[in-house]
Each structure stands twice: as structure tokens, then as C-alpha cells.
Image (cartoon, rainbow over all chains, first blue to last red; front, side, top):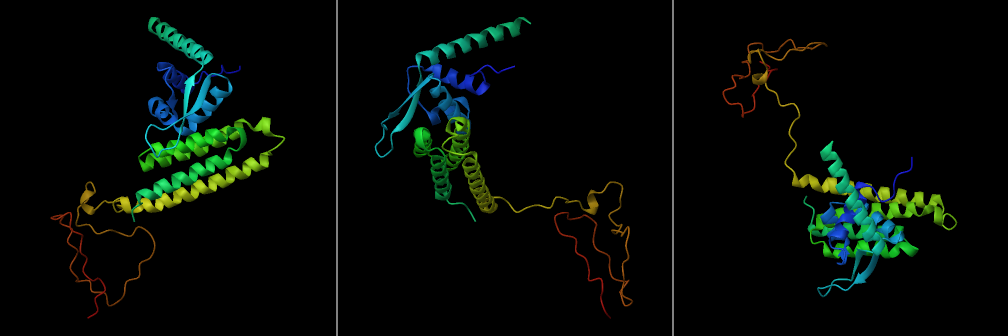
Length: 100
Length: 167
């Protein structure tokens, strides 16, 4: 049986964090702190989501002088749709669990 | 010996550079993205942890993209990179382990039992040899006083008199 893509616990946590502030550009360290993911897990996920067209990225100038530009991320329209879909599925699963 | 704060940062930068080396070509912006995050992490140890993750991430990304790159980069090259990285991580781990020694308290003996801790055994009973042969010199002084095991002061070491006292 093949595994459903982008359905791991880590991916769902990342998508939920990105959906939470979907219009805001987020940077890696911020996402790592929010989701509890280590950089070794976070970046492969970001790379994969980006390759699938679910995530867009750009370089953002630093707010403080002397610091380098930073790579920032946010969900694309299809990424937002997937994240919402997963959020609804999680809510439905929670309700089914409560009824059982 | 304590680890200087700058040491953690220096290793973190080295690891991030290695991660960038692992991810060339189209994926190099990702390595650069990971490396630049280091400048925003104020805590040096957190920066080192981040950099270790960067190395892992770069290898994962490199291996994930391997089938597409098979024509240009062979599996042997990736394995060589992995071996280099492993050796580097080992050296860093050993260095940190060695340096961490100065930050911890002195090691305590694993078995810290005294005669006072033994259940149902009088502290006056001397340790006995259960097997083997013990050679005792003929001129051994048997009248020597026994050690004080009264447990009056448990923190003080038990003092043994000189056993083989010559007349």
C-alpha cells in the first residue's frame, strides 16, 4: 500500500504552521521553533513542498543592519488548499474519535 | 577545560559550510538559506544544533535527488561525501565530549557501598576472600589493630593500619 504524500505528522505540523499565518513570509528558524522540528527535518520538507509547487520562497532583506538577507517561505494557493484539506481531515478524525 | 562560546559557533559555521558543499547546483540556495539562519541564532549551542541539522538536511536532499542526478554524480561520490561528513561529525563529537569534561563534576564511583550499607552484616566483619590464594608473610603482625568500621563518621574514609608491619 502506498503512503499518502504530505501526510506525515511533521508535514502536517509544518503546513498548519504555514497556514496559520498564510499571508506572512516565514523564515526557517521561526518555523522550526513553532513546529518543534529540527533543521534536519524541516528543510527537506520545505524543499519537497517547494518542488511540488505548494510553497514559494524568496530572499528578504534583513531588518537589522549587518545581517544577511534571509530565505522566507509561504504557501502558494495550492499549498493553502492542501493545508486546509488536511486541517478539515484532522478535525473530522478528531470528531470520529470522540464519538467512538 | 571549558568550551569557549566562540568554539561552538566556529564548529557551527564549519558544518554549515560543509552542508553547502554537499548541496551544489540547483539546490545550493537551500544550503545558503540554512547557513544564513545561523546569523540570526544568538545562542551558540543552538546554532551548532542547527548546523548539525543542516548537514543532515543537505544529505537527505542530496540523496532524495539522486535518481535525477545519476548521470552526473555517481552513488560513489555521494557515499564519499557521507563518509567525510560522518568522520567530521565524529571528530566534532569527540572534541565536544573531551571539552565537556571540564563542565561536569568529578565522576563518582558506581559502587559506593560501605560495610555500613550491607543488610544484616555486622560492620565488624572483615571482607573475606572467596577464592584464590593469599600469601601472607610469616612476619606479619597479627596483633595489629583492626580498622575502625564503627560508622561513627560515614563521610570520613576508613583508615587501615599498616598490615605488614615489620618488628
